[in-house]
Length: 317
Image 1 (cartoon, rainbow, N blue to C red):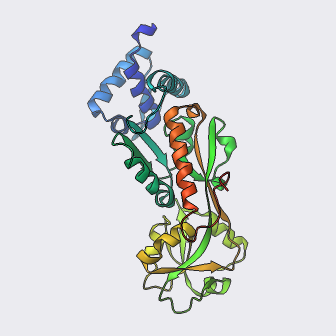
Image 2 (cartoon, helix red, strand yellow):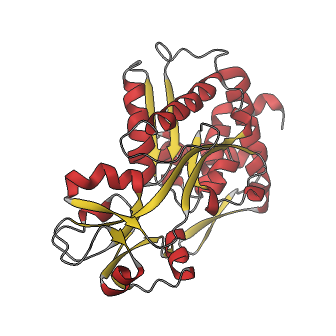
Image 3 (cartoon, rainbow, N blue to C red):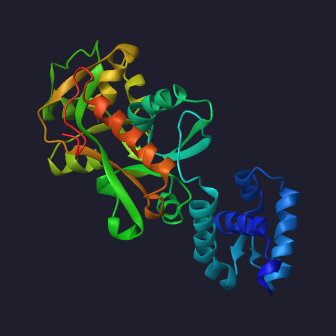
């Protein structure tokens, strides 16, 4: 096979197939039809002389040759994007750019919502695609498939992200939250209130969250009456109940009026919530990405000016 036989468009399809291991999902990610991707896969098989994907029960699996191509194909495409396709400068008032950001619902409310407001005030050519933190965020970062992932520092082992850069953006603290009509809650979140009230627990993909682990370590007993998989929904579940929840303060302050809830100052030891933006180091000098990171920092800094805000993003204090 000669280099002239390789169609760059086929490499783009191959990258999607290697990532998704599914023709339909690959087609969706590329905004192509399934028949078009199936045709491209047939061409790739002929060109590379390998099956690439084979059926194993109900699912498709990668052949050893396909597995060996994952990183080289991504490296080639990323190099083309960064050195040839990407413009040497970035003008947010005139350029078209689509930024992809992964983060929790808490990040969406406290960081991405004001970021969207800043982008929309600049130009119609800018777009922000926000996605929740899924099981593949490490792979997505390592493969340079997303612009930024905003993640709690304590869940990220930086040794697993050797090719990635990071920038602290959020420092928050946890507080108690109850319905304004809660019959027994005073002004403080105490171990006695936690033990004597039904508790709304935050659960992440079936796993106990950092704050729950810290409460366990502090010996705080809770009687779990309900669970939630997102911080934003928790305040909305409290009105009319005796539930007690523990949520990040910046979110709690935003929700007090909308959800008819009030904040309790914690008497129990609770960890700080520190979050950083992570991205592939290949994007360090990308002008558009440099601008995006500057906007994230500006939004994080503006958070400090909000009434009741405490703490500062590391490096901004």
